[in-house]
Each structure stands twice: as structure tokens, then as C-alpha cells.
Image (tube, rainbow, N blue to C red; front, side):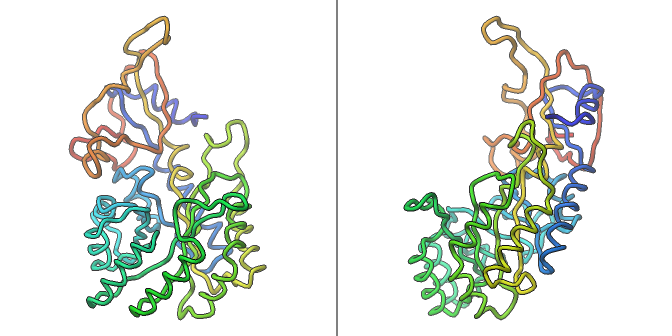
Length: 337
């Protein structure tokens, strides 16, 4: 499951372990391939990289140079995205928990907020009454079976109430957002959610003064999601979603389609390299990657206890390495190369 070029570079490197190794050209190529597939179906299209997947600046700034926007889920990630050079209108603020100060800062900066609850909607309406101009999309709950809904997003009756609350405050609903919570090998789950909310989407489209934002989230798979199976081309997802939109009376040319990929862009092109530190009969071997080591860039930017995500773990026995730079990943105190 680990690309051969990553294996070769990991074994030939000369760095003290553990360290993270990224293939930046491969990440760039994957990003362009995904964006081109969706742009072929949707003239108005945005790829917003998921910061929670891996917020190392070498990756985020590379994706910004590829034309990507940013999807963040906390005030710390929002600050990191702004520091990386994303403009406020290139940032989508998601997540089920947004603190009052985070919402205030995001609205003041002009960031697009994806409201997850009626409480957030009330906060945004209050900011509008104070003279701010929130840019708001509403997150939709996803049906799980016939009677159960996801715990994230707004239920249909809450969605209607949210529209009324924002309307009274003079805040237009610019679009919707949802996340399937899956890593499917075909577009069926995305199509299903669009069908669930068909009537509401048609109403929003009829009132939209600009292309209606439909943000279908992420969940596009990496190799680890289907070991041994070949992943479908990105065009399969784009074509399937476009077909569903047309069948529901939502012409692709009148929609701004937003996707929020993360692991599908990074995971297959990254690896955690570790050395065998201890041998023990019961557990066979223990690597040095489990120890608490020097903070890496993501720790310093976001949270001291957070480990880098969106990489595979790969043990290299008795590894002797020297310095290898794959791209502009290193910042002060970083252990990424």
C-alpha cells in the first residue's frame, strides 16, 4: 500500500527517526487531476483542502499554489490558513463546535461560515444585527436509515427555522454543506443526500442571486479505504454528482460545487518512517515513533497534543539516513522533511 518511490526514499534517507516523508509532486499531481475532473462537470467549482487532515505548511501552501481553497474546523486552523496566505473568501469554516469569539473573528474577516446548529445561526443573526455581514451556508443532517439522522447538521424543521432566523436578520443563505461520513468507491452516497434534500435545494436555487453553493464535503477514498481494490477515477464521482443534480432540476452551470478532500490528496503520498528500538517476544518489535518526540510543525500551529494525520506508518528496520528535502515542509522546530 506504500508507493515504491516512498519506500526507496525512506530507505535511502539519512535522517534521525522518526520523521515524516512526503512526495509533494505526487500530491500536486493528484490535486490537479481531481480539480480537472470536477471542473469538466461544474463550471463553478472549488476544491477546499481539509486542514484537519494534515496542516503542515509545506502541504497547505503547495495546495494554495495549485488553486485550492481551505476548509477549517477551529479558530486555530483558521489562523493557520490565513497565515498560509489564503484570503478570507477562500476559506470555509466548518465543524460542529465554533466558539463565540471564533464566529465573531470569522465573520469580521469575511470567511464563509457553514452553520451546523440553530445556536450558531442565532449567533450569526446577532452579529448581523450588530452591523456585520455574515457569509452563511447551512449544514444539512444526513439520514442514516429510515428514521435516524446524523448528529451533525440541521434537521429539515431546523433548516426551515434557520432560514427564517437569518432572513429576519437580513442574512441570505448562500448554500448548503453536508458530509456523508463515508469513504465510498462510487458517488451513490452523495447522490442520496442530494435526493433527501431535493425540495429545499430547489427552493434555495430559485432564490439565489448567484450560483448556489452545494458543498458535498469530503470522504473521497485513499488506498487504505479499500486495500487490494483499485480506486475509481475522480471523474466517476464528478460525473455521478452532476447527473444527480441535473435529474433534480439543479443545473450544474447554476451551482458552485465545493468539495473538501483531505486524505485522498495526501495519504497515499506520505509515510511515517521509524526504526526498531526494542525487540520483545510478545509484541515482536517496538518502534521509536511511539515515543513523544520533538514537536513538529502541526503541533506548534494547532495543538501541542495533536499528532500529524494523513500519513501512513511504515517501519524501516535499522534505518541509517541522511538529509533529504522533498519540498518546503521544514519550519523552525519541524521534524517533517
